[in-house]
Figure 1 (tube, rainbow, N blue to C red):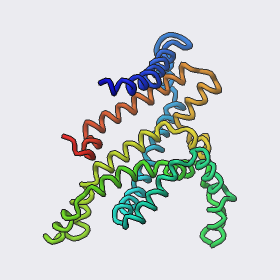
Figure 2 (figure 1 turned 60 degrees about the horizontal axis):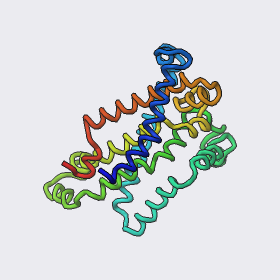
Figure 3 (figure 1 turned 45 degrees about the horizontal axis):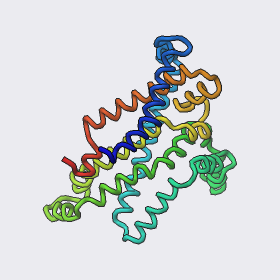
Figure 4 (figure 1 turned 135 degrees about the vertical axis):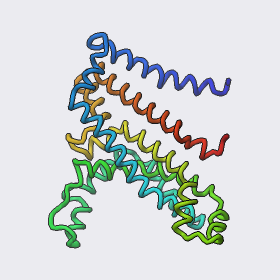
Length: 270
């Protein structure tokens, strides 16, 4: 227990105390009561922002999973040298400054960017596509940023699987599709669920990428909280929005653990 004391103290000082202060301000400013929460729930504009946040987070999670699954599988089957090289490239993207990565996508996706100019140049499209300041830009930018967080648990799960199991299934007459659908995919579910949960929860609170690559019609809760607190100095309403997002996130996490404990499955703990 003594070894855990520093970690517990850090959590108390830098997480629990700020959250409690935010909760207090959300029910005391500008007046005592639940007026801020009622305003968030009754206003159609705020409800749209919350709905957009969950839609974008779900979309980013699905796209990240579709791209991350084959990438993690490739990392698992490549020779060790090539696997380490490719894995290093994936990890390297995490170490690059988030603002720099987002601005890079802003340059690439704009009307006169490399992607549109290339597509126009090779004749695939006649006019530049609207790839930025909309949902497409937000999804592309956030998927790129979130991809390592879904590749890592998937890679850990896939490398822990015993190849003899798949060989035994093939010797018993199972086709490649049957081996994938009935053995490989279920065995990868712990990594899939852990990665999907991590990406979804992180996407809920994202601010920089949606603010730079999205438009006003695709505002997310992170942008709303920043505007309420930094621009409008409305700490009460901003705190209520942040606390509602925290409650929903914790509820989803609890439901996930209730239905499927990814960490327990990955570590094999009983």
